[in-house]
Image 1: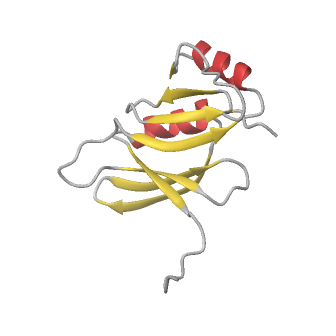
Image 2: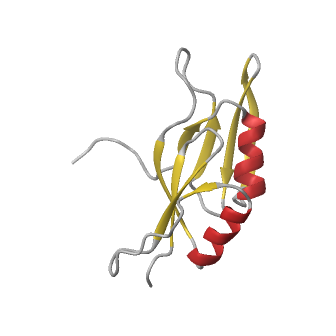
Image 3: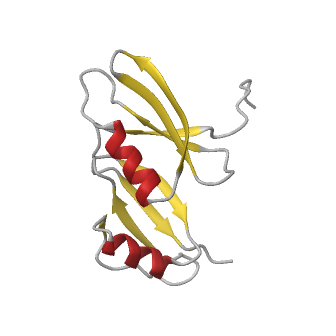
Length: 129
């Protein structure tokens, strides 16, 4: 039993080197909505994006001092209703996606990896009902 008061996964953080470029990708290419954009220090902003009414957001933040941005396997998995259409659309848009959709068979859903402009990896899956 824990004595913590944690209620939810509120946000996950993805480090980015250029906030505007990241926003263009997450909002313009992936279809997220910008829900937070506030200054957090000299020349820095805290930005969060979300899909629809979901409570969990992705924070697009500068890396900690002395660390580089990007190149992370984020562990973020995005659900889709049509993996083939999304894969084709992202590929046509020039997004760095896996060449093929991985299909391992039930109960593993079809999936593919994509990389944002900072080479942070995310996975898109089409869950089985």
